[in-house]
Amino acid sequence: MTSWSDLRLALRGLRRSPLFTTVAILSLALGIGANTAIFTLIDQILLRKLPVKSPDQLVMLFQRGSHNGSNMGGRMHSYPIYQDYQQKAEPLAEVLCRRLVAASVSVDNQTERIVAEMVSGNYFSLLGVSPALGRVFNSREDDQVFMGHPVVVLGYDYWVTRFARDPSIIGKKILVNNYPMQIVGVSAQGFAGLDPAESPQIRVPILMKDAMVPDWGWVHLDDRRTRWVQVFARLKPGYTVESAKAPMQGLFMQVRGYESTLPAAKDWSQMNFVIYHSALRAFLELPDKAWAEFEQTGRIQWASDLAEIPQKFGVTNVYAELGTSFANSAVAHPKFCAALVGTLIKGMGVDHVMWGTDSVWYGSPQWQIEALRRLEIPEDMQKKYGFAPLGDANSGTKQLIFSGNATRFYKIKLKAADNTRMPIFSEDRLAALKSEYAQAAEQPSNLRYGYVRAA
Image 1 (cartoon, helix red, strand yellow):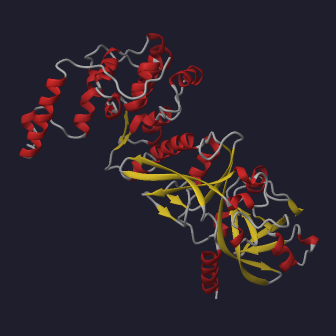
Image 2 (cartoon, one colour):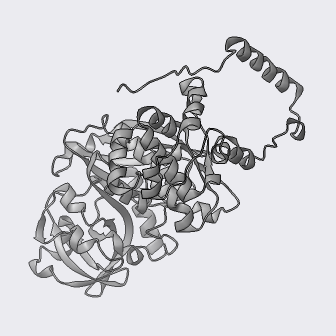
Image 3 (tube, one colour):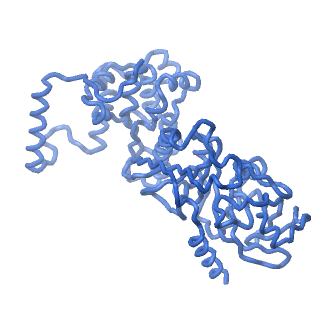
């Protein structure tokens, strides 16, 4: 009987749920390693019709694309990435998560199968929904301890049909999936949830996951590989879906880069992970601002986290690639550039920092090569932060960064005769390209293409 009820609930949800079918979408294609992911913000017309506070500010977040892990439903996220959005997303005033599940409720020895919703503690406060009776959840009381909040908020209609508007229901003990819980409130009349077509009868704090889905023992709150919660947010005043695009793209890209090192670097110890741009969001963390933060804290956002991975997690298969992060800072703020390189070498080791130029965007890489050859970490920074000197233009440190680490990483032998010969047609094409380059530029060129930040 339970399985048939669950099936009917699922089919009814598929048939009746029109939510998020007409959308204005921002699709951001982001490559992390071999994976391509799409992060999407949805400004949904239906959200604006909900009886909640400032519905025009509500958006839904989701991602599509290849993913190392489990996808447990449509438009889902892992719980840790929900926390990342909540703590680090500049355009978002507040973020909530939710998950609809089937559950059994027993009251006075009468059991029925219902739709329940697991929600974050800020669910009601973010939406501006007040209780009709008792209280609703809040982050301080209901979002602190795993399996420590066995409380229930009834939907208004369920309170009417199941409990006949009984005001004494507050404080009553019930069983949810045979787990003892206490009713603490009833949500406001007219509030059916974020998807009115599939309105839950009860809501329970998401930290009670193990009681609500006891057969999900393999799903852990700290697991970044399992997507199982939907995420909604309220935009900060002044932000629109369009203006939130760039900062959310940057955050998502950095989170994905970070996830490629944890815990996969341990789980896949036979693989190597190269973190492009050294995890720095070069188009958002501008050198002047990043330098000011470094002087105050001794840390560089994201890059310091990357540099600490080997020591924190005992892995040796994570590498930092300099790329645009070096190019931008070397031009705009050499001292910050020195701090970035020093941080990476100190944390990861000089044998785990690799050269990159992104020259497909900038033209000749010669000016970046010259910049690193001339770069040195000032003595005061060496003493204050424990950075090792980079040395002169041809120092061993710079030779490793320029080529030594990459040749070892990609198993390239230094003598051409030791390498496997390429097919004849490839050699001919490469020879032609070399000849064209030699004719076009007999001397190294520092010409840079693309965008240059004005002073």
